[in-house]
Length: 180
Image (tube, rainbow, N blue to C red; front, side, top):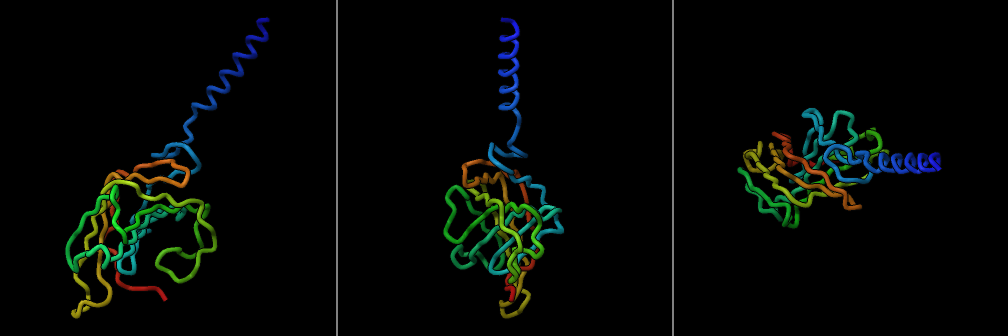
């Protein structure tokens, strides 16, 4: 009888240990791989009117912000802040997770990546501030520098798992140009 109780106790403890392991990853709640939010300055860039991206050193995670300058009525010079709980049309903030680094960038490039994304986590709430500088061209055309700051942004994957980015910035990247 004591052997049977001991066996049941071991099964119970094993099951308890397995369910109490932290499978969430940094900042996440459940599911597969969560964003790490460990972005590096040398993996940031921009293009278009207006697109920002910033990746991890191994290029398997990329934070990106797509902002339609016209729809969002962004100023030619200055800043505008958005509440992601009521994300306006023309603004998308997300994190792409890749199983391995694409051979060519999937962002601001006209060459398709050679690998499929594992997941895209979309922003659900938080604050985003976009700052634009004057165009380098005197007639107001062409490329210009822009920055974006994200604060307390809650991301969610398709399964409802969540992760929060406390604070991140992409600064003085060149936008206003298009690949091709």
